[in-house]
Figure (cartoon, rainbow, N blue to C red):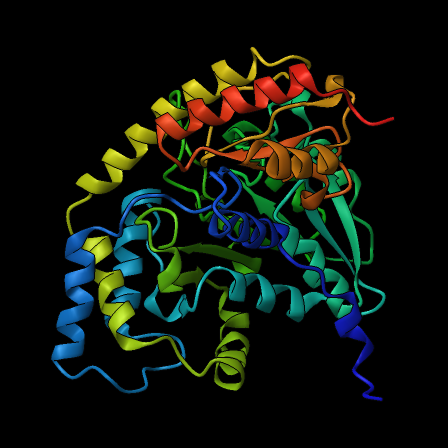
Length: 394
């Protein structure tokens, strides 16, 4: 019998991929499935980005790249960061990675060990907790509450910090809730963190351009007092519809940069060259497709919120960011995961149960409106029919 390291028994997963697999299997069997579960834009990568990758291949960019990324790619990230935050960073602080998750993995691995505590948002992206548990550290959920607009509370977050706290993970705009934490609340948090100078911060800002109703994303980079312990996660996947390209970037404090570079050398070596040229084209090229996508998401968001609030036993706060709604289904009588499973199997609608995003996710489901308006309307009609005809199991 094989004996694996026990840490691997603690690894969780992102259940959205399990739901995607089941939805795909049902569709392949002939069922009409509407997938509102997976968190990826339903738009094509803009053509000028694709062409940049093709040109890079034809120009012979087939070899290894530096572990921290091509200097041209890192300089593009510097330009983009200045344009979106007003903050100038050094290309030597930028790391190009194969997606956003490697930044989470690296940051949590650096600070997580038995006896340490790591704070993370709940409900939140499930990989946070999974990786914390993998390291042997204690995961400490930071509640993200509907009554607070799904923004974190600075006061509550600070109250959870103990002498064992090593890392604080933040996410705004947020997955799965669509919540956006206002700048005033972030300012309170940063001020309070002055009393905890040994706590590192990882700010997941992958949805930074995806805000609505006049909300503005507040990057943690705009607070110089925490820059020496701040890791900022971002990337190409959401903004430019490049999920399958596996392209992310992060900005690191000088004291940690060599550590993440060495981890890259040991783990993935480098990011492929053609994708990096595509990444440069994404940042420096026209942004018309991004703006078109965001207008579509905004229209769909309104359709989703209006439709969800007409369903029996369902209420939905208006999301201010990302492309998710997180409706409250507690009055339906259903447990969230059972409802999500029943909707997929019986109504042909794929959603994600709230508990897949944390212990505080019960009573909610996540719906991604990264699908056509027509499909969203059809899905809501199916959910309505199901809830009106099916009683919750006892």
